[in-house]
Length: 288
Image 1 (cartoon, one colour):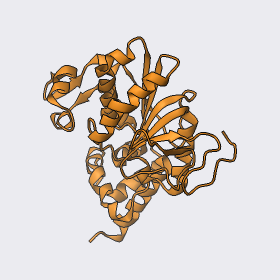
Image 2 (cartoon, helix red, strand yellow):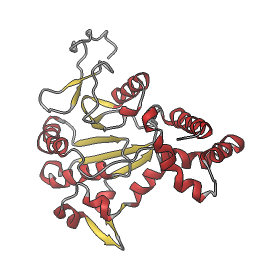
Image 3 (cartoon, one colour):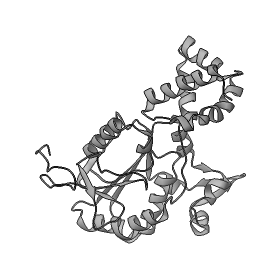
Image 4 (cartoon, helix red, strand yellow):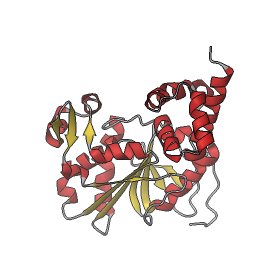
């Protein structure tokens, strides 16, 4: 049974995570703290979580705090995660954007990109659709609050287990080359993506106009108030006819009236036109 001191230390660490990132750890997931921080404790020669908290609170060690936050963040991801979503994007949504855009420019934002598999999956789809995007300026922005995750993404280096998760043999041999026991993604794909450390609660991004925003399996960990704040930021950076894709367990219902479920592209959401009513919510008040 966990001691009172350990429980107190976990609460402090969970509070630091929420204060820095907005992500909340449910009581039944507190066990993740000890598991995630074991390697860090060993690296810094600290015996317990209480010793770690004493270090953090006593010395105001910013670098150590950054390491703790990185370790506690859930960077779970895989290539072509939720294949039906990527099939919809490939077969329907991207070709639709290619038809309606007056300017040959495609802008995509992967928010909460983890170590890069989602952004690379999109880059592969775009390369596969070379006929559609020939002559276009394609921009893929991929952001995550974890500096460690972004560093991994920029390296383009993935383990055997990571490439086996969602990546077919054809894509692996076409876009990756062996690097010792690991695999390195081609520079051609990596150069398509602009990886940045950024915070969804206070994004420091370029002016909006993103045709497609993916923010999947991120909002699950936020309070209702913070989810609403994030949706406000996503709205601000979405094109007027832009599309938003969330995780399977996420929804806009009761969170925002700026996006509505797309009837044409199942599994995505569209920017709502000014004045249009949303099921269960009143019509817009003319803010946009």
